[in-house]
Amino acid sequence: MKDTNMKPLTHTLIIVMLTTLLFGCSEPAAEAPAAAPHANTTAEPVGTKPPAADSEADTTADSTADAVANDGINGPLSFTLTNLDGEDVKAEDYRGQWLVLNYWATWCAPCRDEMPELVQFQAEHDNVQVLGIAYEDAEVEKLKNFAADFNVNYPLLTIDVYNPPAFAEEGGLGLPTTIVYNPEGMRHKKHMGPIDAKGLVEMLE
Image 1 (cartoon, one colour):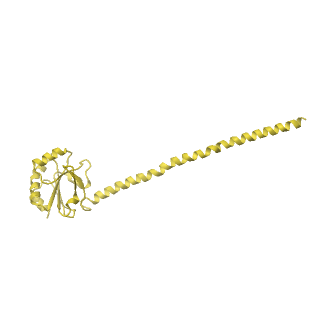
Image 2: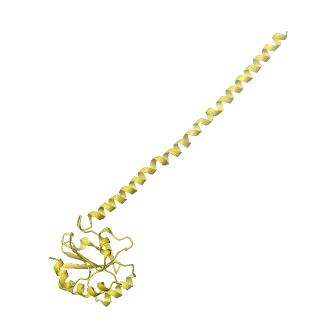
Image 3: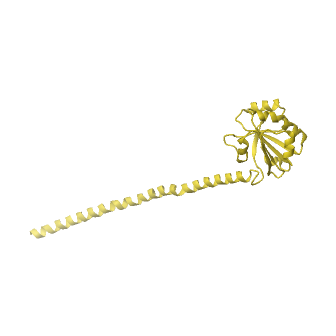
């Protein structure tokens, strides 16, 4: 009798244990799919950052290459600067004629001395265009007053002296500096120091 009564009880215990084991092993399996989104989310930004950095480097390299190619030495001079009225002035506007860039500043005594010579030269040479580039951090009103005092008859342009364009960097090495470009936009001659109308004519030869 004892053996007969124990068998059902033993079977019941075995079934309960198997059921517990089955439910216990199934819980980790249910959590496994949740790990997949985390893996994908962290992987996506890693893959997208390098191309952005490469793109910025390419853009900077292209800009530098263009600046060098358009400096009047490696290729025809090209720039866009602003005159005292806030209007854009481009080197290409004067293609086909001689171009004289004169770097100056209001505080530069030799620059003031040569200004009347530049005015005379411009008045006597319609086939040549003089452009004065103010190499200083000054208010436009101050530059306008200076131009009025000297009866300047050619455009005066402004630049960022703290970050000058590549073609103008050498202009700030010593003021005044005058650089002549031929009708094709290529640099012809350079003169550092004050110059007179006769000297400007000689620079065109």
